[in-house]
Length: 457
Image 1 (spheres, helix red, strand yellow):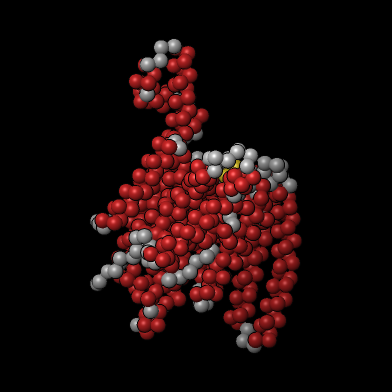
Image 2 (cartoon, rainbow, N blue to C red):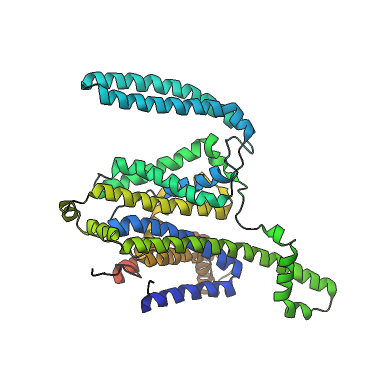
């Protein structure tokens, strides 16, 4: 069983206290919303920490893998659109089959023809004409699919399964993309690898934005089914009404007027239903987070984990000892991406919609990396804590800054130009706060709030 140090317990206690404080000041619904996003952020951070903290592999493709998880949520849970399959399913199937034939033909030519000149000429001809034929079937099929009731459909839909299955599928989707990227790019130097992963992340997001037949693109996919009850259903369920009545019995008994008491009860039921749904999400997300945390720690303490740290600390020495560094980098890169994919599917599950335009690699990738740096690279608990600290700060920066500005300008008129300018600039203060936190951590805790523990074998 993993034992926490004293300072780790202090950090955990402070974080819990902040959520309780927000619950009392801003409401428990707000506190739970922040908690759910913190849990998802912590899972993303663990994914990045596994690749970077364990093996020193840079992964700036976080948003691409996150988007693959979100796509999995759509393809698994959205009901299939029969008409779209009828008008375009056959064409897409032919396109895919021709693509497979094209790949096999190129591989066969590369294997059988020895002379480079002849091989290049044949490959060029096959690829050129193959793409022309594939493009014909593909464009016709996608055009027909996107014309099917584009206001609410215009894509193929999914399998109509419970969305919770997409959490696993999202991990496999992201792992598959990571495998392809890793086979191409993991031989590159670390700085080149960072650029390549960021660029491929932009490509993945761009494809999801423009391939409407697959994910509706910028039109977004809405109405994804939840793994938890809907508020309106809870508000009309007898056991939930009885539970809320029981928990608020003392308050309701003090109200003499029957109509007023019923109105108060209705308001309590509405508030409680929102809290119950958010709490249900939090329980599901916490279960996933603890499962990943448990296995990540087991892996880190295993001989494999010690090997990965040895590769991270000295690749040359590890290679001299007979370890296949590139292969191990590929494995750790795929595992880290898979965890990010799981988080992506969970994020879409929480939101209930898929918005490809919301995945902005150049903006949000570096927030995830700040979480890793602040929490403590190489320490899974530190990664979780960093996810909680940074996302909590990101959300609470706006109300905190608004409160401070109002207090500092309390003597000014409400329409004062300076006061209005400062209040309009509130959204940008969160970037100032992120920079300040990162600066302080790098100056006073360069290994993070909860740094990696030095273990002696």
